[in-house]
Image (cartoon, rainbow, N blue to C red; front, side, top):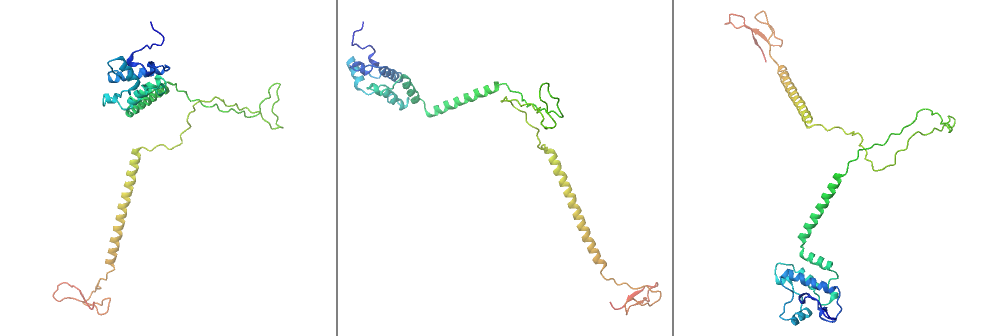
Length: 278
């Protein structure tokens, strides 16, 4: 049985306002939740005492524990601030809701590298889902617009209606309106670009061009050599050659003055030597 003015709870997790005449609100549960989290991290209740009086005094006066100091290297210092705010002595200084307290503890335990990794994984999952959704969509067949149909020549007037008149020059239009439905895909028009030339044909073209250039070079060399040889032979032909005129007698007059033919006395056959001034 309970009595009026009595407090119900465990002394290790009770908020300070439960030991006083202050108003108890939902903030007392935030304090108790912070005490439980501190015990889960450190392995012991936030305050220890031999008697209930000392335990109550610790809740009222002592500062909240720091998990990073009790277990160095195991927890980040940011978690100490979360515990301190959750176990604040004044209710208005604590977290307003349990969800806010849980979010603060999660952020304190998550490093920047873990946040980046989580963001990358989330974005990757979203990209995979979008790709799967687009792959499952059925592809629509391209639909072309119907061509406009025109009527060539005069059209007989409809019964009961007014036909067209040559005098007025007004012709009824037989063009059907295009559909107004949007969202259709249309086929691409003809490709007027020149086809790509294969690599082998380009290589053959270069070989042919090189052969033609080589033949032209050889012909040019032959022509130059012939021209030079003809020029040199012409020079030799123009060089003066001394020729004596034939004669039937022992002496004969040469083309130039002072020239004559003489026959050597020791020769059995008439050998004519040309003597004169050169």
